[in-house]
Length: 176
View 1 (cartoon, one colour):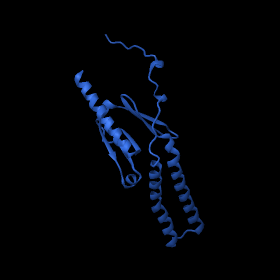
View 2 (cartoon, rainbow, N blue to C red; view 1 turned 135 degrees about the horizontal axis):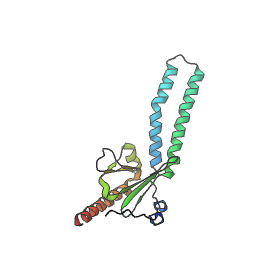
View 3 (cartoon, rainbow, N blue to C red; view 1 turned 135 degrees about the vertical axis):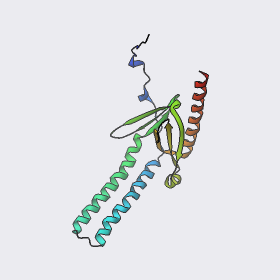
View 4 (tube, rainbow, N blue to C red; view 1 turned 45 degrees about the vertical axis):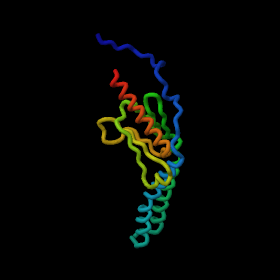
């Protein structure tokens, strides 16, 4: 016989009370530099149009350039502002990552679902000593959880911890 007993919601674990670890303080610096690099060609096109006398009134060039600078400054500010809303936590059976200023998102990934783990560093991240750690589950081509901007030493420790937890989960499943 099949049963479907009601569960008291008050007895469920409260993940909202978790103390999240913050990502590295160098992470927003890397993101801000990325945005500044993105805007270089945008500035070049505007300045190039002005230098090559593409017919527009100078006030329009100043207006367009001002908008570009304002967007660049806003994106750099956003990198630092949104940093405080990112964090991760490791629990007994899962890892949690939270992000988002306007749309908040918390992703909980159980250890027994993780298939493999990757760490990535680009040149700028290497200089700032930060790493991205990517956690994959079965059946997907992209990472199910990406924690950007972790301190490199911490990401290596977490990677080793997760690998040991995954191995423990495999052994427990084989024994049962």
